Image (cartoon, rainbow, N blue to C red):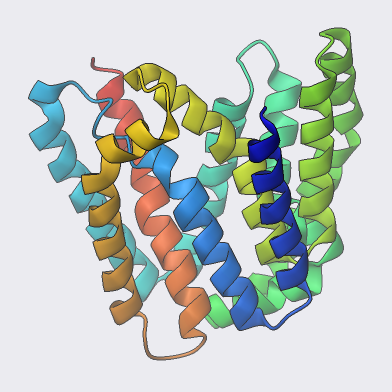
Length: 274
């Protein structure tokens, strides 16, 4: 990693630490920008990795899924939230660790989603109440997340030992640092930093390799139309959830769900056909 890249990632984490000390709207803004700028690009190449002859049907199914997710989030936000969390844990587990390391898959996938609940259960519960207006269900969900995060944390040393045996100290340090930030920082900030450092960063390199892009600039130019389309979706989500309780948080989570769930469900179905 170049000095410039290290400074960039250092600045990203430093800004997150600063945002963690500020108000919830600032934390929401930091999370939205982090995921949008550093997380969105790896998923924005979904269309590019699908064979050209299949792209019209793929795009149609993708947009239908986006519409269904937004309707689901509008009318049944609690079940939509649970679906987002469960699917995200599975997605992170399968994308961030190879098939030969099931313990690492379990630990990483679970901690990425449930880790913030371990030390910030009440804060996460308040956020879920604002999103769903179902206090009892939100409290139960936060409690379950804290329990599964504790289990995943117990087996994390086994994962680190695996990195040590493979002589991958750099990977081990990155994993431990990402998990610590997930656990210590407020839920939104911890997830944003963990998502970028432990998932989006590596998956961006994977997508660049698939598309033969040797520079980030070339990759971004290739996927720029999709990024514009994603921004249109996000703008529509902002309008849809502008009113009511906690519009900023609802827009953030609904926007993430609308873009992430099709990325997690629709894209693998079409790439498997290639």
